[in-house]
Image 1: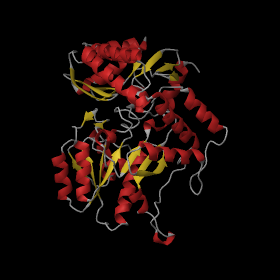
Image 2 (image 1 turned 90 degrees about the vertical axis):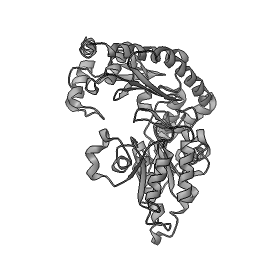
Image 3 (image 1 turned 45 degrees about the vertical axis):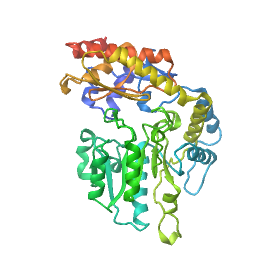
Image 4 (image 1 turned 90 degrees about the horizontal axis):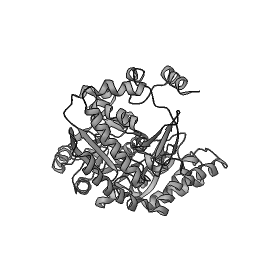
Length: 439
């Protein structure tokens, strides 16, 4: 099919995530991506674009990595899928051992699922059931952070704090307690007020991604860990977005030497190749589910594609690249370069407010416009015309490139972003950008 035929079929049948379809079917022709290579994506007309958001924060080393391609192909020659209900298989076993080795100390058990949302859902159910069957059935409440985002299933939405995404579903949600992120005194107040009733605190360590790359102050995560210990509360760290090198360490918790009781992983786990998630648990949590069959302490939860062999093979190859290429050290170097580039090209621009960056996670706040103008969206249209794919969170422009991006590509990405902000800030930008896309 040619591009026009694909776009027509898309409009006729597809329902896209987080997308107002009326606008999608309006005056902005969809970009149809056909292939990728390294840090670039290519549309069906052959145009190249820098992947400035790692295909929604999951592509790690880049597209079409030979080592990951080969690992998936080799596994495909053996078996594409086999259940883990009553069976096991080598790649799931090997990956579990590897994850127990590289995650913070004490996280020894791995429960696989398919996405960040399911990883969080599992952690919530584990925390609830652990408390209920280990002497604390009164601990049924969860403390979340304001503006948190943990996924889109009902449980993960319940511990989310973004009204834009979550308010519609409030009648379906279980009740939670909410604390101000970054304010340890407020968290202390919330937990103390519900003394003895809190099962767990859940947070995104260091950076609240979907909230607009909101940063937590140094020492906050460690203080949360200490507070949870004092009050007998479990700590759930959602590292779906922050894990696998994004913040300059393999996991954000490492920055402050924190080991949570439960850790949620997804996105970068397979290098951006296949859906796979993992909920990591301590031996104490795991042991709290052991007993005779008639004790009914089993964790009754599972997914058809739990521990899919192809996805586990991709994840093992992904982690091997981290080791071989010294990816974490490289990310730290890229993060310094990104800071300098932002200071030089983006910070001086009119309408640029706060710049929030941790590692290769960056949010650029655009100020001075009515939200109805959708200036953040206009920036992404302007960037698309200049050869880069970025996404906004409202009027916060997000940059989160693949960790394998080159110095030159990073320079190009920031330069395009700066020009796109200028383009989108101009009077009449909405009509002129859409007209250029149509042409």
